[in-house]
Image (cartoon, rainbow, N blue to C red; front, side):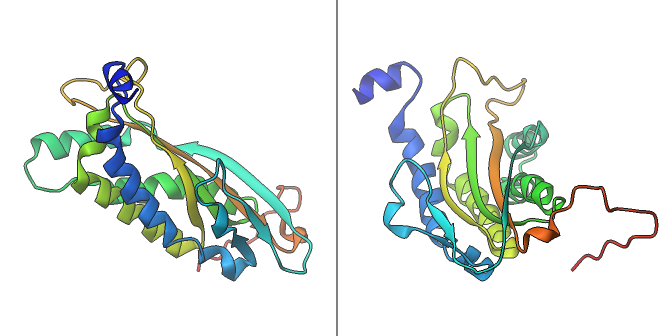
Length: 204
């Protein structure tokens, strides 16, 4: 069966190194949401979805959004292939990818607690580059630790019929993810109705 998949453009042997690196990184993030009163069920890490719960005693609201990076990592790919610096630039790319979504729920008054990523490449070969994969995982870990969210699951499809990079870049994936945030207490929900001239935004 693996050979048939590979002939169709999905070579799991080449994708597997990326998956392993991301899974090992993700395991290290699972307790980060605990400070928000949210706990990941670690008995279901290999299930079809992440399971988590809020154990605090305050009223709360969940906030969820999906966000993608856009075309920015095409530039990183060009630099990696042609600038000859030895850098992949994917640590920074990962940071940007995760914060794009995390910032959106923060704008609603939520604190990010769970992130699931999708790295959709146009070929299986893209995933086989361990150096780039490790840099990407390092950037993901840095954001998860910074904001207090876990990365318990993700998706890394090879979409050879759908994802095509603009030349001269050989391959550049579409990077996106879904973040869940929690608003505690529920009264901290920001809708815009109470905002007025003179309000201050405090960054910590």
